[in-house]
Image 1: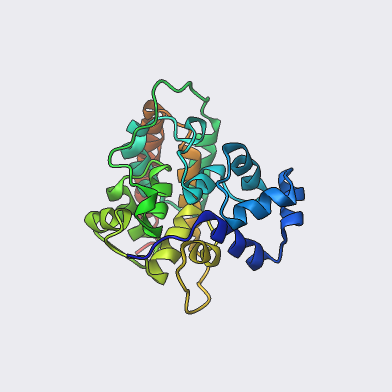
Image 2: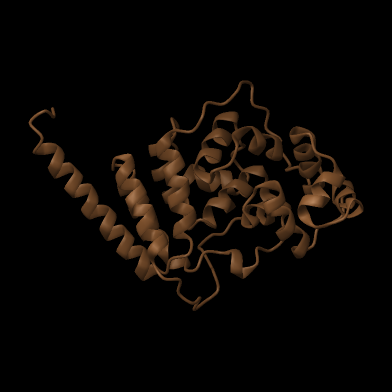
Length: 259
């Protein structure tokens, strides 16, 4: 099993890849160059530093916590783990809509009021990021309210790869290793740069990856925004997405120019 690089090695690679030094990153993150050098050398970054590094590096703080390995703070987790089924269904239906419909659904999600958290985020079978680089990527999607079946459904729609639900579980437990194709697929749904994700997980990409499909870009945005929804709100979104899909299908059938 490939062992994931430590966070210091990831940060060193990212700095080199972007042509930055410790001083430049420290200025962006409101830190000190010595603190950045310490992390590169193997010091464990604290919660405050990870939160400051995230915007300085252009990452969601959640993803940086998953890459670094500590417990994800509750305020960075999705609001409601029980929303996962509705979130999956909403995104699947959205992917059968034209681009304008997907954007309309995204605006609706953003318009919903923020509700208070009523319980700790506790998804089923949350993987251990120490299980390997694949586990870290699966965990990022779990923190976007996708279970293994949701990953199989949605990645099968927005990437060239279709894998079974069980396979995503095996990736998450480190028993199936990441491939360049898988890294590119995960990057598309996570809204991350595939070249950087490959470097951060220690996977070599043999060629320049193609840009993600527009559907993948929209799915990544929908999943990220839906993290703030309660289960009831997610059901509202799912019902709207299903109605929009049915309307789109009926309109297509009624178009005399259609097949």
